[in-house]
Length: 112
Image 1 (tube, rainbow, N blue to C red):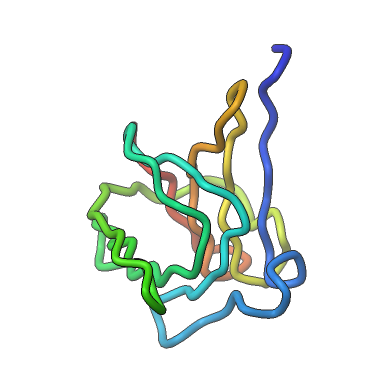
Image 2 (image 1 turned 120 degrees about the vertical axis):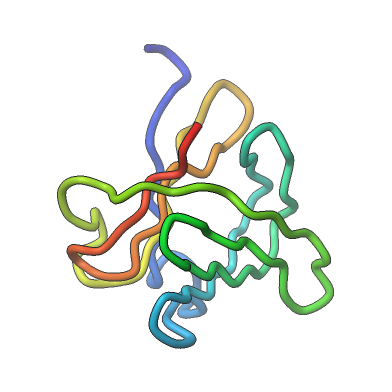
């Protein structure tokens, strides 16, 4: 489809700020606004915490944005290898968060 592509953000692409805070957490700096379930999240630093099927997305360092979303185990492997990564789908003019990968084999898809 024209105008749609998947974008993988890895630690290397995020100027070294993506990584684990502790097991089940990923810290990232996203350089562009993105949407999750129709809510626009501004560009900035985020901490994502995974507790079972629930993922907390929380803004950091002055970014007060936050929300809970449901996840489900992602099939396959981390597109960034062993590095923590977020995956986004670009639809026309916006990026939509589609997945959170903690390691090479552990990831969550964001339920729609």
